[in-house]
Length: 342
View 1 (spheres, rainbow, N blue to C red):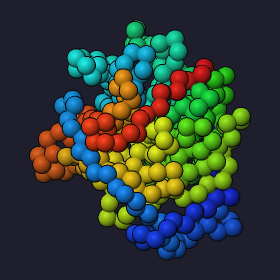
View 2: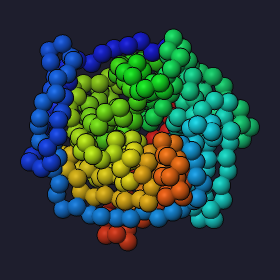
View 3: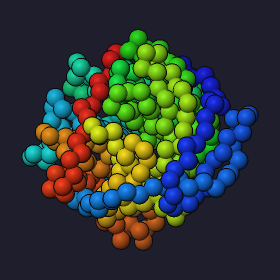
View 4: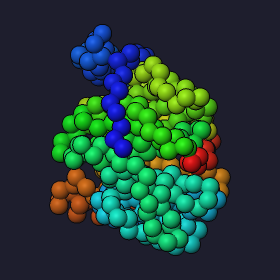
């Protein structure tokens, strides 16, 4: 079924300490926004790291990377080719599944099955047989939208949102899918859902609309899965990239992949930039921690959006990259992936 729309009006930005200056949205009582100028960046001691090529897969739109701790394998998607990929980082063995529709994101289940967000709705997917069983429809009255980024909250609900494929118009939404199969609306008027992530205690939810350059943080009720107050967590500079997929580490740092930015940026819980991971490709899409110690940051990228000249200059665009934080002196480690509870 389609998710009902539920506009969140009682939201507003949190000013940051002095640093780069950028325009940020200022809330009006109606819930709409006007533009104001606030200082929104704070940079503390910053670590610069480099990611290395791990798999030259050259996906058209690599996305949604997640680490399966039970299998010790990495999984991600190539959205436009409707493919699910897996990799064993030890022997570099790969496997690819072709789905019946484009796939935006997914969650693992305890029984070996997967919950997959295909373009038209949620499905249960069996990696052994390759069969996908439809569970829900997503915005059937909006033919230009499809499912995109998704992640489980700490209680095992699957939080997933959509995007408008015509021009990232604010038409889509973010929904919650419970263990019982109930769909609840969370955010409306979304152009392109990204950066969904939860704090280690589950009481904060991060969200970005890639049609803009802001990352927001919501209070989150772990008992009923409802959103509370929204504050501005970070604003990317006008000449930089746009916020894409994110992950949270055990220190509650948010690592955000920047579409068009050639980097993954790490923010501390107060929104200060503490590290950057640079890559040799521009369209960075998502990241996750994995490996036996959860100390390796795996990063997906895309060819989509590049000119022919840019593709020649970036021959590994769309490939999978890795940055091992341990040799770089960082003690940040990831959190185990949360299984879908249904």
